[in-house]
Length: 104
Image: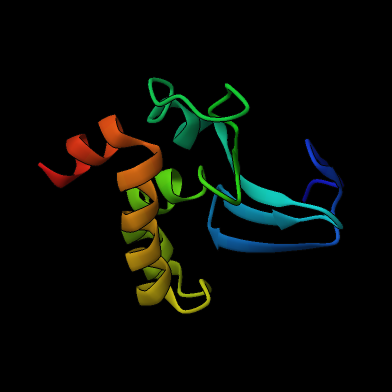
């Protein structure tokens, strides 16, 4: 597991699925993706301009929806169905092109 994120030192992490890890720091956090998962989101812009890190306010929803089946199958995501609903609302407002692609 990583000890540092773009937002600072790691205080907590949760493996949502292999290669998809949620990290929290004292001030912020987000989702980290391994190289295999990054390749599938290289064309989706995010706040940090990298497919490796997806910040917790607006960007987390992209990998959560893209890899929802893996995350659900792994079974460690807190309130999966509620978070999935929130993710759909989040991408509708913050990642309109991705929302159109996924809702089609």
